[in-house]
Image (cartoon, rainbow, N blue to C red):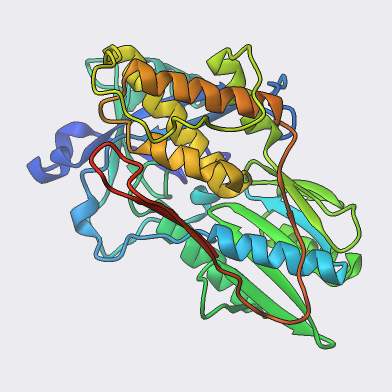
Length: 379
């Protein structure tokens, strides 16, 4: 059968499982969503579905289960160097990446339970599953392959992809476990890894396509993108300007603004009263508190990735997420208004031939209501 069959999920008779095995049976969920476009934020006609194991009770079974992802600093630095040197870029996405990995044989088996609806779907796909349906209409299956939600899945995939890249002649960076490179004719081809998304930086189109072809031979069905304008991890990388790369997150930005329903635009992210706290301001209700917290977290991610000028105001709002007030909500609206008026701004990076560090530090004395000062630094 296809990758959805017995080679991934093997049905078992629940009655034959031991007490300990029954305790390790994980619930499962099927998530179906529209995948928004990273550039426009619009939802295409395509749907993305993923079967995910629930809370993993088997985490104590694995000593080493951590899986790294490329750091934002590494990604930006390599992107700037690629722009300076006129490199060709591309991205590769591995659909169903975890399903390539076999579950460890030196650890107890992992089982998942499908609810009634998913059980009916599986039986419709393959009638061989019918005899394993329990009296309650559900079904328990043994995991032969790694599944999203399993605590060890990402680690297994990273180890597999690392082995693949090393077999292709790539060496892992000493400074970032998700940066790999190989040298040919004194030119380096570099890859950055974020789980199943890989970005390729090659000295020319030929070398870039060579990497893509090598990976495609080993993992059929890859989603590949090439060109001077490319999306990766929700960011749009534009290499069209000479020796610079412009990084924006238009889709993510538009999604924040649409959810917030902001109408008025502002030219600055905060007013003079940013650090002024009104102790008598009315607290927000539970739902508004949750929305405040969620929006601030989204702004923090956006500001750290491509909107660094917003970090000062966002950092203050982060200090207010536990007990936000209406005054804090007004400051958040001001920030969203600034985002609305500057939604096209981003981060433009360039690299020099010489390596040096610039550090800027500033401080405001006694600006907080408790008399404390505030210091900020930019490196």
